[in-house]
Amino acid sequence: MKNIKQKRICRVCGCSDESACFNEDMGFCWWVEDDLCSHCDPETIQLQKSLDKGESEEEFLRSLKKVS
Image (tube, rainbow, N blue to C red; front, side, top):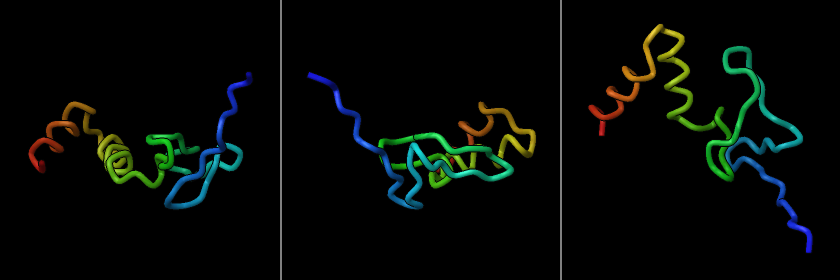
């Protein structure tokens, strides 16, 4: 029997595998959860902003631990 893959749709913006989000800063979105794209995920957005400011990924992860 064939393994049928269900179409994924972002629960926030409604994008899908066939119609991904795009913005100039982050490019096309990708899936961070089964129903959440990277452009709608607050952690991914914050990581991108940190990287844009020149921070390393390690610095970003340390800042998350301080908030938790």
